[in-house]
Amino acid sequence: MTVLCLLEHEAGEPGDASLRALSLARALGEAPGDPLVAALFGQIPAPGLEVLSAFGVSEAYGIESDELDSYAPLAWARVIVELASNLPAAVVVAAGTDRGNEVMAHVAALSEKAMVANCLKASRSGETTVQVSRQRWGGVLVEEAVVESSPVLLTVALDAAAPEPARVPAATRLHVHRPLLSRSDLSVKVAQWVQPSTGVSLSDARVVVGGGRGVASPEGFGPIDELAGLLGAAVGVSRAVTSAGWRPHSQQVGQTGTRISPELYLACGISGASQHLAGCQNAKHVVAINTDADAPIISRADHAVIGDLNVIIPALVKAIRERGLKNT
Amino acid sequence: MNLLVCIKRVPDVGAKITLTRDAQEIDTHLLGFTVSPHEECAVEEAVRIVELRGGTVSVLTLGPPEAAEQLRDAAAIGAGRLVLLETDGREWGPMATAGAIVEAVRRDETANGPYELVLFGNEAADTGDYQVAVRVAHALKRPCVTGVKHLDVTDTTLRARREFRGGEECFELLLPSVVSVKEGINLPRYPSLPGRMRAKRAVIEQTTPTWHEDPVRKQALSDPVIQRRRAEILGEGVEAVPALLGLLEELGVLA
Image 1: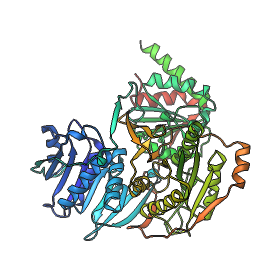
Image 2: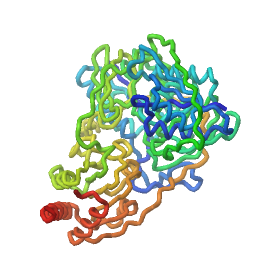
Image 3: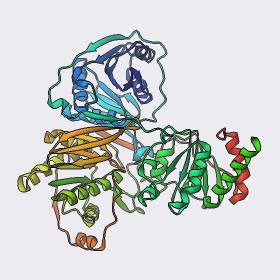
Image 4: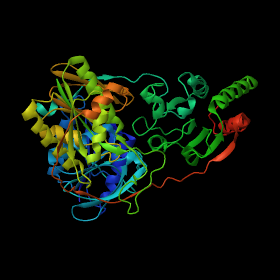
């Protein structure tokens, strides 16, 4: 059985989400000799090829086209559909990123097949059936399901099992594929790209200081901002805070905001609704400050302080400053 | 300019989700219902576009008779026409849902003229299938962009921006087209009192689409295996600050 995996990459190096997808795709092959095929848009340089080999990719297609100088979802999907039908692939896998889910939805629509988003696990259960565990409610729930389709189309959740190289690296054969694309396939295409602004990005921050309804007012965020500054942390907030207009949505941690995975998440005055927990379940260490000892966040935290953040945070800021003075 | 927004009624889950005994769905006995957050923003965005450029906002939902409540919520902030594709309690997969929406759009467009823009939320809060908008766009042969966080519409074109790797990418599309948006594109308004009164009286057009079985068959739902931690309480109030400071030191997050 052949499995085809779409990989997103930066300068030929597949990203973490794509490597998780590739690891899940490899596990779907039932026999050691089953072809694992990777498709990347652009040229595949030597370091990229080494990664593919380590992950057990037997065939790699570098899709090159002058017209695909920027991302075009429908064109990408058209190429994947053709590749999948030529191989033919029994399963097509992509990362559950914005682009991965978008391209796979186009693949599904073009081929009139089912698509299963954000899988955590998948295993073949029949000639054309795959057993999957997939995320529901932004990852707060998991659904076991069986999908029958040819091919089966899956995307892989961003917090599925960590990427794992193959036990034995494969001798990856490299192919250059030059697709023929119609004008209509290219009608939606990235026209312009704006660089990220500098500063601590919430999704990559090592430390996040979070504020919720307990902060009580926009002005109440002063001490939270100050603490974040002292810790080199990003500020994250709950949906209650952005819905009230106290803080911009770009700072929202949650199912419909940003997903964070810091070493430390200091959640202040956040009760811990499912919506919020979906965004912070990958934090390594959670410390909650809350007046309510029974708040759901407390049962998800490693450490907690029971009390009013509006008193505790200013005191903590003062203690950190004093410690700094003592140490200099 | 005529706009259509597709929304979904979902349980308004708080902190703890309880499953039914057969693990097929969420136990909604004690829950209220709402609309998926992304879709709430899609309705707001459509109303803003029409306030700026003139036209109508229609809102459609596929769901049980009770989903009329979510249509009225949309009417309360400015949607005009309300369309309910009524279901009988069975679960609808994304392929069947897209099919029913396409049928309704074709019917509407034959009667009332074309929709320049059909808006969706990027993904529903409950199922998160990430595909209904794209399927509808394909069936209607219209260009589509998903996950949009900023939208500028003219009479014939739209510019859509969305996040990518911490920056932004921008698409330019010709109308008519299909767009799915994400929360954060705007801050939805609260309904005014006259808006709520108008919504109460609004007429809901109702049809019953044909259900189709989805190729993905659900077996059971479960809570994922995240270790439920039991927090170690460092203390109460400011007296806990030295312990908190010690913990931050231990975690190596202090300079």
